[in-house]
Length: 385
Image (cartoon, rainbow, N blue to C red; front, side, top):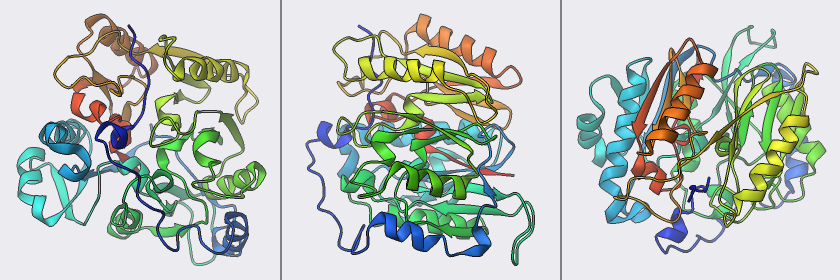
């Protein structure tokens, strides 16, 4: 039976209950009102642009964050090992910065090797795509700034809608922007990097189930959300995918459903298990993508990349996230998973080579990360050069 494209249902898998909403999070004023207030910064109005992931990177940011409290004894050690394996693979192509708790420093240094730079910082988990800043670049001059300036947008990580304790991870975006020595851009929007996929030319794929969810942005209209995202990321066209809320901890992130391989070219997942909640969702997404046009007015070319039919049994679980869509593009390479299904792994490798002909495709065993409901892309955040 084909494996579902299920996401991070780790809390349910481990029998943990969601944490209570933190005091002061999405407080007194509505998100819409706070978004209006954030527009009063004239230095940041209409000048920023989110580059494509395939643009040259200065480095990749990651977090050595697995803990027994969240991951449990069974997954803790393999999750650390597989996370370090991802870091080592990326470090062969570009610099890697890894956040690590002070008590885990020696272990991280041993597992990651000397090509990965460690930064001591309290963290709650490993999902840097969601906790870290979204890096953007200034397109034109502004007050006290210059063309090409890099900044990090802090999207106010709130534990995927208060589903997991995140006191430390809420500070990660600010820490990374300071460590990277770039401007820290604030917004009233609450979302995660895994919910946003861009082509670098003004088009974005975004799931409604995540960004328009009341557990992130109560009272916010789609038009107000679009206006703020266009302002912050330089977007001209947003293609909204419905996603699905309440089935996984992320409420259906874009980066497990569809990705840009290049402007005008999208690779999308397809769930072939009729019993999966993603079966209908992925078909709806394909219909939308095949009818959509990008910011240039051109129709998208959509490639389908199905998941494996089987996975290795050692870390197999009901919520094992076995999709290939969650790959990561770094300088000169595409870092992608393999799951032990020889035919599906080979098909994924072949399609990725076709989509990224100038990059080496490196496939890794990330079973422990997948058993936690995530993938390679979820663990990374690129800093553009």
